[in-house]
Amino acid sequence: MNNQTDKKLQGFFDQLKENDRGIQIPAFPEPARQRRINWWIPIGIAASLILGFFLWPEDSQDLVPPAEVIIITLEKDENNNQQILIEEKTYLETWESPTSSLLTEY
Image (tube, rainbow, N blue to C red; front, side, top):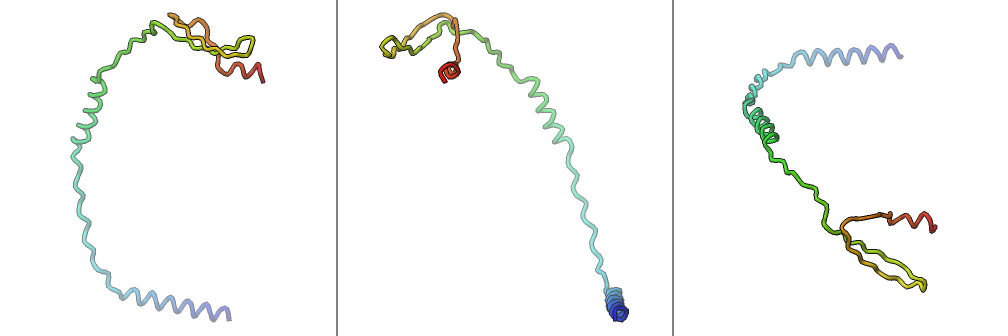
């Protein structure tokens, strides 16, 4: 039975191939040539960008430290009263990390 089924399938597909050979294939038109890109346009844009990069004025920033620094500290006295101290100096003498107390207190 297996051999007979194979012959029927082979005959069916052979008949389809014969039918397909008789079909006329229409002639397709050749695709139109695409218009070429004018290369001077992208080259001009690239040249303008390169020229602009070199001619762009550089902003020279003079890093001058401020004349005065305002230091605001919050301190506790003996009675656990908080006091705000505001100092004006010409420079910052010391700096403490605001999170350094977390290392010592907890």
